[in-house]
Length: 197
Image (cartoon, rainbow, N blue to C red; front, side, top):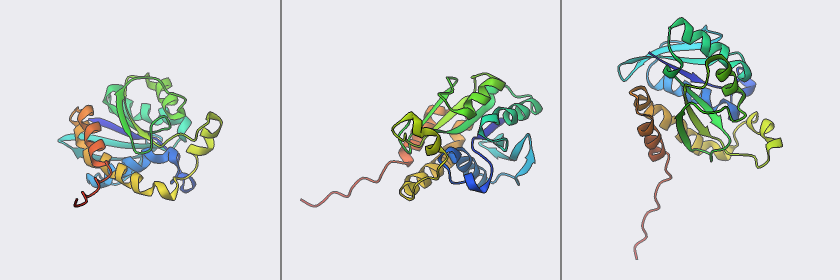
């Protein structure tokens, strides 16, 4: 079994925030792969499904970002899973919009959701970093991530969410590099048509 965690803040007022891209991706993965109904448990909302022959529990903590570790720890403990069996999707300001990086372990990099997960579980879980871009100065970061995506972001954002959901089976099968490559391929802008010379 794999625990799939999306990071975000609960409530309609946060739904379109850059900080909530983790929720957006996990929602689409659950929808695309036909997960069962969402229900309240583990200090969050969860849904179960089967992807690439493996059982997957999707979890979106409802504790607010800086307490995300409570929900993940409760789900891992209940299912007797090691942190290595957890994949976390989260926003990353140090990546260009639409870019994706996957790695196991590492630091929190100032991300309150990751900091909470690290405190409860240690760092040895998988992170899928979803680039949302940087506002240019660290003093602007807090407001930037708690604001909705701009209308201009709509096209790449939809493409990224769709690509992550489509390529997700590769993560379940234990191929993080192939997952990252597939997402990069699916989110490439279309090549311009050659003009007849």
